Image (cartoon, rainbow, N blue to C red; front, side, top):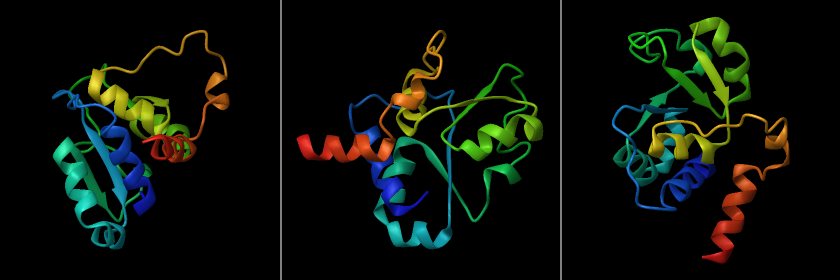
Length: 139
C-alpha cells in the first residue's frame, strides 16, 4: 500500500460502522518506510483488524501462517492483479480479484458478493481511487 491507498482504505472502512467479521483475515503489504510515514493511518487500519506486513510481496506469501491451509474451502479476495494471476499456482487456493471496496465489503459481510452473470462489468466500475475522491468531495 501507499500512504494514499491507506487513506482510501480507511475511508472505505469508515463508510459505515460495521466491524470486520471475526472469521475473516484482512492482510495488507506495504514498505516499512510507508508504515512509518503513515503513522496513525496504520493504527486505524489495525483497529479495524487489518494485519500490516512490511517489506514483502504477496507472491512470497505461500503458506501458513499467512495463507490459510486449515480450511480447504477458504478463499482469497485480492485487489492485486499480480496476486490474482500468480496466487492460485503458488498457493493452491481459490483466488478472486476485486476492488479495494469489494475486499472491505467482503471483510464486513464475511463473504464476497456474487458476480455471476456480470461478465466483465468490473471493467466499467470506478477505480477505488476515483471513487474515494468522489466520496471525499460530497462529504
